[in-house]
Every structure is written in structure tokens, then in C-alpha cells.
Image 1 (cartoon, rainbow, N blue to C red):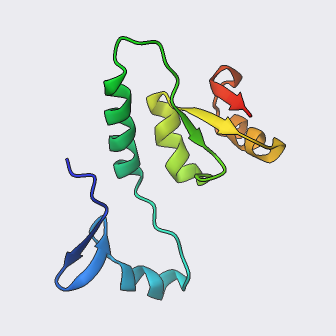
Image 2 (image 1 turned 90 degrees about the vertical axis):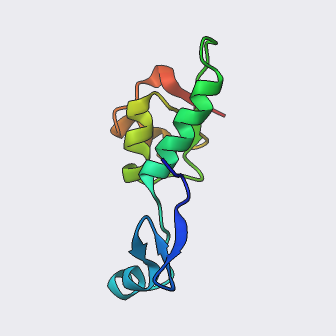
Length: 104
């Protein structure tokens, strides 16, 4: 499985198979593009490097606060690194147990 999100298809820059121009027409600009499948693949690769070693890989909610991106990562075992009450509330609202949240 490739984790390359951005690539050209038919001379159009695309993300996960969807032309960015099509996304821009639908939502306007500027916009962010996330590929949860690519993030999950990278998370799995990182986690496999620590196989057999107790660890908790945390997603920084300051940089990644989109529920559609966080849910699959949390389901896979990721924790959350939070720096505010709002980020803590988001992690808890998404069902992440407090034992997998690092407040720094």
C-alpha cells in the first residue's frame, strides 16, 4: 500500500485519487486535504518499529484536530498529546480513554 497522498493523474494534481481542482470547486479555497488511510499506514509503520516494546505513540491534537483523521488512529491504538482544555475535551469526546492522553 502506498502512503503517497499527492500525485498526478491525467495531468491533474490529485489527493487519494480525487483531483484537487474538484475539491476546490466543491469547498472553496483555501482548504486542507487529509488522507486518513495514509495517516493510518504511517502510524502502523511507526508502531511496528516498536513491536515488543511498551510504548504509546501520541498524535498532537494541536497539529491534527480533525475527528475523521483522529478516529481511525485512536481505534488503532494511538494516544493524544494535548496542550489545552479544548484539546483534552476533543480527545475525550472522541472516546479516547484518559490513560491514553498526555497533557503537556
